[in-house]
Length: 381
Image 1 (spheres, rainbow, N blue to C red):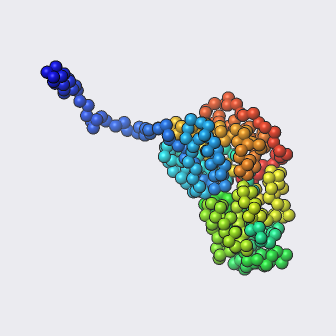
Image 2 (tube, one colour):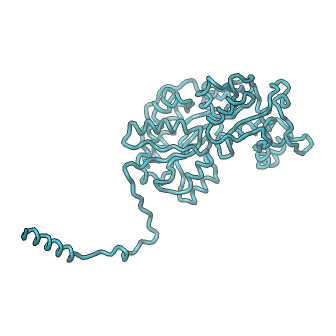
Image 3 (spheres, rainbow, N blue to C red):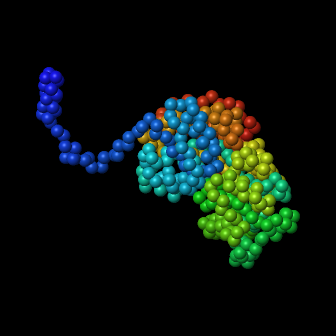
């Protein structure tokens, strides 16, 4: 016992004699870059388009199952809301990827630059068709872009240089050959890339059938777009949130209603809803690839390069997404409704994206698989 007490006294004396360090007197370095702690369980955060979300969620699940990294978190915010969150900050708690059903806008690039997010890496993943759908028991619809514009525009040209509030209440008002069915459309909100693409592809082109709108476009393109893109707010159009599933549910509750949604959601619900033809062409995998279906667009995601050293697995996630057995014509994303890029474009997009992320131009693309019949024409962005 005596020897044990002597040992304790000795240890206490040594500890008391060691020099102390007062952390409060260590000067901070001005302008130093914040240091973030990175844990093994740090998850990639993905926000943005509800149309792209099913594809990124499927890749996230596969990535979490086969890699050393946890499955990324995918949040549906809409394309516009996604870019706002993506461009807000750098760091492991900020989104590293934004899904988009359109290209990034110049205003969004500027917003990103203000937060230090420069030149996000664009990855074009495939094509999607925008469909107008109704319940299985509803009438068959065959619409032109002009009829869509006449049904949904807030104001129509009066033929004398002025404007009249849209008077059409039924589809038969738009065209006597259409069903005598109330115009009631459930669609995505203004933050949605699907809505952006819909007004640009369908309403803009439909408006050009009017000489007054054609003249306005030639005279003032911004005023033309403002008029063509303005959707009526008198109850004929109802914003149904970012989730296309809510639009499907609205159609099932009311057989007179139609909805604007992505082709992938239509394909997953063909037992419950059907799509209108556009100028006689139905939305199908083949018609969207060929460009024959006239309301189609490209889909993307963007990667925050600044988060590469802060969030483990970012490059590996992009690698998994762009493997042929994922985004190719026979890949697991095709089962979710993804319409693939041309084989040459898939190879180029993968190579450029991985080179940008690894700062290497020697990244080998995955071995491509044969594609179905495709054409080289680009889709509307």
